[in-house]
Structures are given as C-alpha cells and as structure tokens.
Image (cartoon, rainbow, N blue to C red):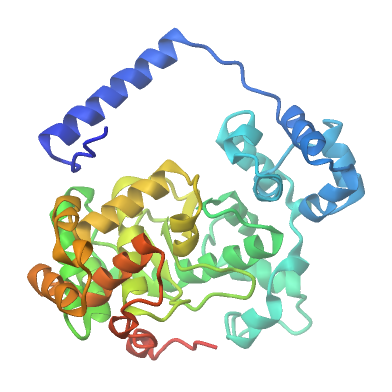
Length: 389
C-alpha cells in the first residue's frame, strides 16, 4: 500500500487481490452488530449538548423530530442526508439497514418532500418549466412535472431515491442539487441518441492521459466533451443553482448511460480540467447505479482530512492522469518551482501549464504563486449557450 502502485500494473492487481481476500476474511471471521441509528443520533446530541429543538432545521418540525427519536417515524434518505451533514455522522451509520429499504421509505413518505425548498423562482427564470404550462398550476405541480420529465414512466418522487455522495448537503443545498441534477439529466436525455453505448472496457489509465493531453489545445474543453461523447459519456455544462456549491457530478441516466455535469462555478483552466478528470474517474471506477450520484465541490475534497475513499481514489486517478507520481516527485517544477520549469514540464507532458502551477499551489499552500498561468475567466467562453449569472 505504501508503494501506491498504479491501477492495472502487476503490483496494482496484486494489491487489489489482497484487498479482496482480506475483506472476505473479515466478513467470515468477525461479526459486528449494527448500531441503532436513533442511539447514534442521541449519543451525538448528548456529545454536542443539543436538544430536540436543535434538530428542527434538519428534520423540518418539532413533531417530526419527536416521532423520529421515539421510533414512530422511520428515517428517510432525505433525513439521513440532513442529519449526516448537520451532526457529522457517517450516512452509512444512520441507514441501519439495507440502503434500498431506506430509499423505499423516501419514496413512500412523499409527504416528507418540502416543495417550498426548491429554488422555484430561479428555475422559472431560467426557463426550465414547460412552455405548455397549465393555467393555475401550482409550484408543486410544476415541480412534479419537471421531475417527471426525467422518469415519465414512474412517479416523479422516484427522483428522491437518488443518493448524493461526495459532499455533505444541508436541506437548502439538497433541493437545489436535486433540481440541478434533474436538469442535467434532462439535457443529457436529448443527447443520448447521438452517443454510442458506453463500454467500460474502453476506459483505462491511458485513456485518461489522452483526455488530459487535450488541455494542451486552445479549444481543449470542447475537444474533451467530443472525446468523451465518442466513448459513450455525456457531458453537460449547466450553471449551478443558489445554495449549491457544486463543481461537478457523475451520474447514470435512466437508460444507464454515464452523465457528467459541470457548473464551471470557478472559471479557471486548471479547475475545469481537474474537475472533469475527477468525474471521469468516478464513471470509470465507482458509478454502478442510477439511484446514486457523485456530487463534488473540488476544493472541499482536497481540504478536509477525512473524505470518502472513492473521492480520494478519484483525486488520485485525476492527478496521475496529468502527472504520474514518479514523474512529479523528481521533476524540477516540484523541486525548484519557477516559470521556466513549470512550462518545461507542461511542454514535456503536453498538458496545460496551469495544471502544473495549480499542483504547486495546492501542495505548498501558497495560492498566490504563478497566477499568470491560471487563465482566470477563460473556460466559460467555450460554452456561450449557457447563461452564467
């Protein structure tokens, strides 16, 4: 593990095999009784000196808090998200049973959906609702219809089964994220017929390096989207909604095609490329179910001490796609960072110099260094069809 072997190499395959063997042994040799989610919540409340009223912002009302803590009301996926973010409890600890069962609760308890929390006015301003709206239609009816455009064969609330992984979302961020991801899937739906079937076997570490090298070209962002489309991966650029600090997302459409959403929240060359490669890594390594999405705020993943293992892996895969660890460790750009050394390494690897400069900034913690390479405000111009407020 200390050698951090490259995925697909002989050592990498050996490490993967050993990991599976150890996991199998642990499952057979040790049995752990799952903790009761309510006991976990009460322990954290006691630890933080919280009372029932302090959970109201997370669960919605005093009566709902009381029902949850007394065991009269089951935790829904939505509640788990809110409590996980608000109390700092791992979401898996709050499930307490199979994830699909928890998802079912979310679908059954449609009354838990607070339609007023959607950024309805902003969605309407952007023209997300059908032009053929019915006169007198309420905001809730329009929102249900909007979500139903993604899964017309089922009830719109099925969208609430989708689990957002990667970033902890509070209630406001959750509803904005749900609406944004639905919009991304809706736009992807219009492109699905033009994109070939996705074949995971066509993705490899070398594929990601080929993608990274497109950053060398002036119109690289557009070339990257065309490159991924040929592999069966749809990329949609959609500006974020209020309350949701999203950079990128990876999800599957209802037809099972990988969809990457990008907000271009930070309009900077290195930020675009790292976010894109991070999401492609999720598609390659982690995306298996249309019931979940990976939602990412890149600088948060890089700055917090404990993040989900899959986020760490996506970061590592993205970094290695641009600059392999062995190359970086002995490079002059790292050992003696100067403008010339940064440019020379970028030229050698055929990647944009902002990616090299960004790595130096991150590892040194000095974000004022080499800003001249960053090309702030240059990516959105390639997506003039999007309205960035």
